[in-house]
Length: 440
Image (cartoon, rainbow, N blue to C red; front, side, top):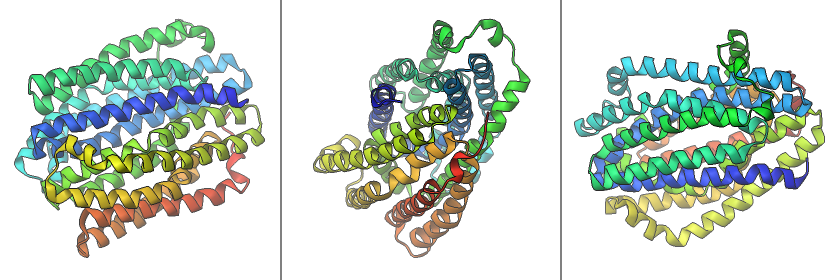
């Protein structure tokens, strides 16, 4: 695989991540105009939403890995079948999660975030119901995008994502800024953008049918056998996602006890930090089909070489963007209008994260994508489970809550956990076991 091919696949994913995180940044800034309770409600439900969305996007990722490996073998008959399994498995998991959490949303919010103020819980309930309604549409888009990325058609998935988020942003301006609908306005915009693009995603899949050897007879009915196969491959991805995001919810529960101002500070700090994670996140997404295709061709040398290149590129991206954003911190905070007392806390958090980003983030989050694409997802799942629940949660509670270092202490522990994951994944990568698992 030439570097020209790699960058033609990578560039659309970078642009996709830029707009995705950029839109989230703008949305957080917009909803902050509705007050600390509104931004806190969006933030606490956002953690739960991340858990559920990552659950069904993990299923789509399993489909991406299988399609990428079959594409590397040029086995178009199986690529066509995997499209059926990937799309239907993703929608099935998302629909099941939406129904379950819709029925149980009140006790779940009370259990997880009962310490929040009544105004925050009221906004969280509205936001959660609205998000759950969008899952069928969003999972359809994710299932199709997973298939497109598997064959390297990242430009097409970028077009869908850009259009979806543009519609979302435009309706947010209308509903939140002009109509002052607050949290309800966010959910209304979300559903309009997801379901309109879900229809377009199905049409896009049909338009690109030649690349999959696809006919709609294959997609007309659910093939339970193929769906089960995708789910089986996706279980480690989904388990890792559940453990990781479940741990983040536990951390969120700790922060809730610190009060509405600290919940809002956490939301603002996270939004600001995510700006520098745009390119590394894109590297993580793009590396899955790249390594998957290399493994499908049994070209281990390319898989290793490209993974190392992506790790280096991730580190350089962090140095450039983090240091570039640092002088604009004060200007950025004016967009959110946080409580003055929280600004120094957010700034100190960002200084810690700048250092840990450059040293450990890429090995902690980009490198596992290569391991998963090669079929080593079980190992990454076990590592994530142990590091999250034994270190991040345990020491996060000790440092942040028991010893009283608050949200700053929690972020220090969180970024320290990146170092543990990075060391373990580097040791695994320099061994030979990660590419010996056979998925196809």
